Length: 270
Ligand SMILES: C[S@@+](CC[C@H](N)C(=O)[O-])C[C@H]1O[C@@H](n2cnc3c(N)ncnc32)[C@H](O)[C@@H]1O
Image (cartoon, rainbow, N blue to C red; front, top):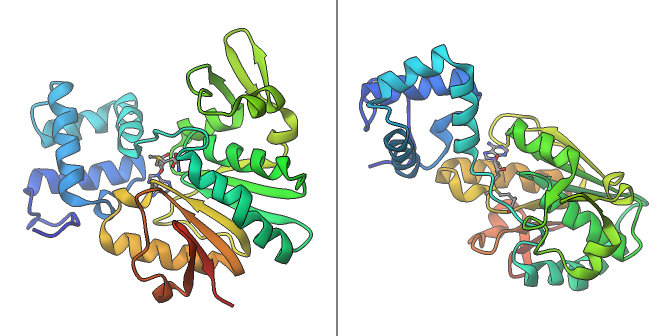
């Protein structure tokens, strides 16, 4: 069975599912075709079971009638789990080994893109790493397909459990505590801006020094993943670096004009 989902009548999961995918794409703006087919089908089947939705035709009808159902589905589909400094050892490599390379060759203002930034944890982690090296002239862009995550990212307010992976020294320095929440300090907020961007459909920004795209491509079909990697590589300046997730080695980086410099870090060849 193919890993991608198409929305034709001859769909491997049946015509109802095909119709549902078309409806979901129309109403959420998320094209399920580009995600791993079997995995997506299984997740949706589980979701329906939990919510007592008997079949895909009924689900499509509910989406059509109820905008809240659409919002709930969009949130579920985007799997926006994240944390600050996820896989800490890789962030240490970024700070200790990759940044010196970038800082040496960067223009006066470093451009950083957290693609699939969820609620901002990754983009703010990057900003803190840069600030610690006194690199404040950084423009960091956080993008995501999910508006709810983006609103949370812009607010920059997190619970104690959400900031538990932030090193104490950085928590004290770059967060302000108000009641039960930790608020990202203005010095860090000023370095980051967030906007909606669909990696599978939107135009890509260019001339990036560093792109962080972690735990996003794992949900995409093989073909979409390759398309996105091609476009991410093209968004890097020559010598710029792509930072991938802890399980996301690129097997043939040279195919994208990249070369591996450390595990999960790829540099665009001149
Ligand atoms: C599992 S989270 C990873 C967050 C963060 N990068 C990390 O590693 O902790 C995946 C994120 O990718 C976003 N996403 C899913 N499909 C996307 C797409 N087509 N374009 C942009 N973002 C997408 C989701 O909304 C979600 O916030």
